[in-house]
Image 1 (spheres, rainbow, N blue to C red):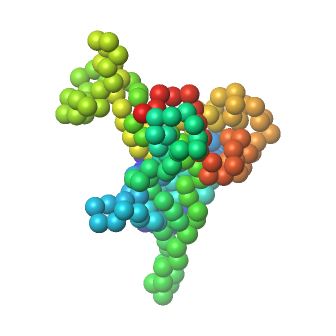
Image 2: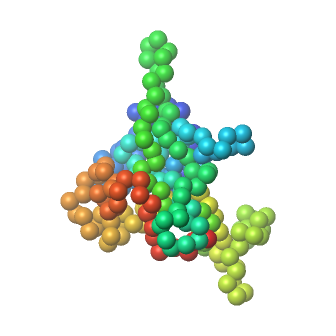
Image 3: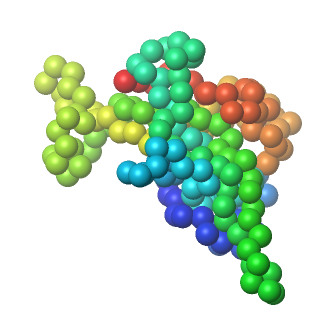
Length: 196
C-alpha cells in the first residue's frame, strides 16, 4: 500500500511516522513514497515537500527517476515532480518557535516515470485517459503510471527478495539503506521493469 500526506508535524509526533517506527522496531523494512510535490505551476523546483511517512528517519524514502526509456544509467535523472528534501516538518517549543526536522530525504530514487503495470477491469482512470493504455496486440490489460508511489514498490521488492535483506541476514531494522539494498546512498536503483 502506498500512502502519503503533507508532513507538517515533526516525525517525532506524527502518528503515521510513529506507526512506521514501531514497524521498523519490530523488524519490518518500511519503504515510503517521497511524494509528487517537486514542482508546481509557478515554481519549476520546490524543496522541502517530503510527505509523511517519508519524513520518518527509519523509513526508506523513495523518489522517482526518469530512465528516458533506456537501460543505461548515464541518462537517468530525478523526475521534476518528485518531492525533494530537506524535510520541513516541525515541532513548536513553549514560546511558539518552530524547530524543523531538516532531514535529508529521499534516501534513494527508482524508476517511476511511465511504468507499465496491470490495469483493472473497468478502470475509470484508464477510461478517462486512454493514452495511459499499453496495448499489446488486442490486450489492453496494462497501463502506464508515474509517481513516487510507482517507484517505491521497486525498492520494496528489491529489499524483500534474495538480492535484499535475505542475502544479508545480519542487517538490522533501520540500518543504512545503502547496506540493505547494496547501493550507494542516493544511487538510482534499477529493477527489471518495463520503462518508457
